[in-house]
Length: 224
Image 1 (cartoon, rainbow, N blue to C red):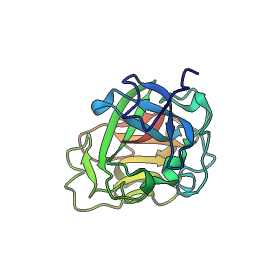
Image 2: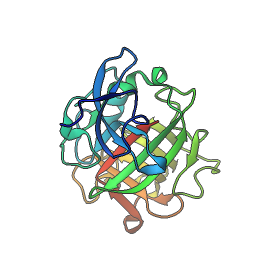
Image 3: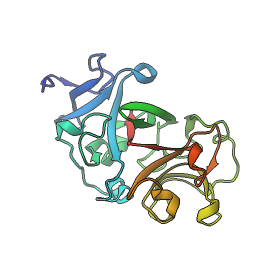
Image 4: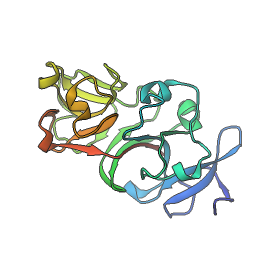
């Protein structure tokens, strides 16, 4: 695999995006994917959601004490080639790893289509994903909007990584980002199961405005 040497974290790994071995707080080595390009590099992927994969459910997986595909090297990238979600031990030991920043990135056909940056210092595995911790996003209104239905890893109606402006019934739901399982028809428009949707505008959008709603293949969470 070419990942025999062990590093403290991705910030100390070679400045080349790929798979490396890093240490947990018990000095045990495990493989991770390091993004060494985006925002100066040093990013460790800790979680990955794949479009169309309904089991295990995304929110319960994040909240659980389990890992998933941690040692599956084909899962250690930002493509959809490995047909499953991914979670490593860092999520379960978030505070022990003391991340300074977190990043949520969406990918389509292997290329990043958007990313969000969060301040993670002093957070736990749930409260970092919030409007208060948001540093940057592609949406000009998200940081300052007053009315938010959800900004949560586990939202309502089996929706995850949900950033919703308001609910108005399925035809009037408005938001920025959501991993949806199909509670409303718009969640599976063009798909038969779990989808990763985002507003392609510079603001929130009605989820039924399909021309201005993007669908990603992968949602990944990174820390550094």
